[in-house]
Figure 1 (cartoon, one colour):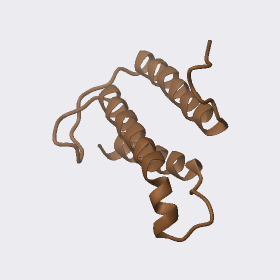
Figure 2 (cartoon, helix red, strand yellow; figure 1 turned 90 degrees about the horizontal axis):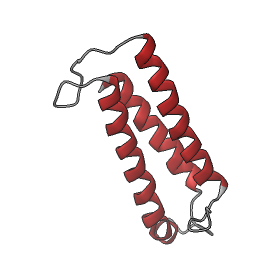
Figure 3 (tube, rainbow, N blue to C red; figure 1 turned 180 degrees about the vertical axis):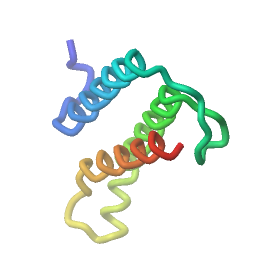
Figure 4 (cartoon, rainbow, N blue to C red; figure 1 turned 30 degrees about the vertical axis):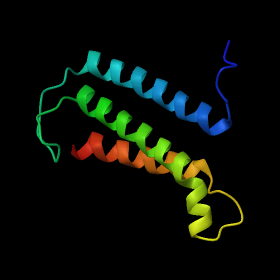
Length: 102
């Protein structure tokens, strides 16, 4: 059923993190409805809006890292491509920033 994708541990952890975020946000929204607020994003957003924007940014960071990791290895004279765990940590930090300050 899941043969169409290369399921590595980092990929599985990334998708599990997304599922846990969605479940957590659903429970949080039920317990405490959100209001719009303004942060550094150029529009007033709710928690759900910021989560969606943060998840999009996280996906873009991971895709860019996977696409550029070969070039990074060549530019920095690394013996192998950098670990995708780096992009996972960066994308989760970016998501946290958008959720808190966005």
